[in-house]
Image (cartoon, rainbow over all chains, first blue to last red; front, top):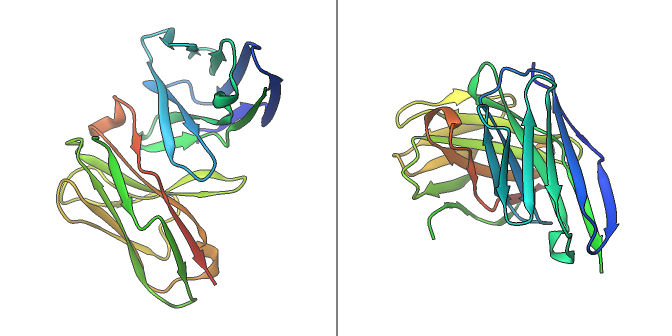
Amino acid sequence: KQEVTQIPAALSVPEGENLVLNCSFTDSAIYNLQWFRQDPGKGLTSLLLIQSSQREQTSGRLNASLDKSSGRSTLYIAASQPGDSATYLCAVPNSGGYQKVTFGIGTKLQVIP
Amino acid sequence: NAGVTQTPKFQVLKTGQSMTLQCAQDMNHNSMYWYRQDPGMGLRLIYYSASEGTTDKGEVPNGYNVSRLNKREFSLRLESAAPSQTSVYFCASSVPGGGEGYTFGSGTRLTVV
């Protein structure tokens, strides 16, 4: 069974700092990994999707990397802003098929002005 | 804007009442999903529909039923609501296999008293 761990569970940083969020998974036979952002009381917004053939994906100040062999993905946020405050979740498909996607519980990020 | 639309956004039910959560997507996705999100437990799959005309149980299907009305619409029904079903419910859609990632609706916050 796929298990997904996100560390840290919560993070508070001053504005402007670069930061890294971690996602670890136990079953490395995945075909992609997706990072989401969730604002309080809102739905999930897709940030980045990394296919298994890729090492990283970039969108603006966000960069996500994937290392299947070690079962890890990182989300790098450059020059953090108060508007980045949210919970960040990673979603990892299970080897059993697309209907079995395991989500991490998330990292709650607070960027202090 | 293209996406996944859920109704209602909020609902309070009394124990034993029934209700249907509606979900519609205009992304021409074949696959649709219902998740629940509870504090400290992450998102858990309730039911999914790989394509129009098919539905299958996910991780936590007890107490729920679903209907894939057409390619666009996928509803979730609580026949006899229980306090344990107090949660935030999310609908999502994807292409078959999830190879292009998942798109989520904004959620329905359900309280059963």
